[in-house]
Image (cartoon, rainbow, N blue to C red):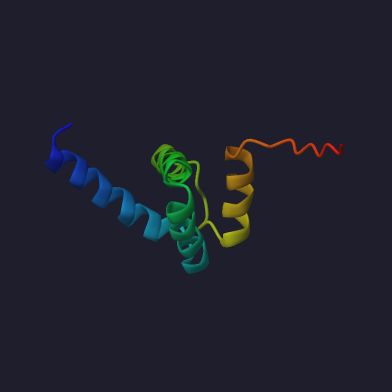
Length: 83
């Protein structure tokens, strides 16, 4: 993809995110972008695909976005060892 095509895609993706996410969910997505850009990109691609396929019936609120994020993030096992 050329730079102009990438810019067009980013603009389209941003516009769709504004349409399908509530204000709170958009704010959470922004915070995720700051903390973990790779995860945020993965989330945006997923939401974009769901929207394009017509599977999305309602806007996504903050709670629904948290659920999607919990599915996308791998679970970490925490093991505490004492000596």
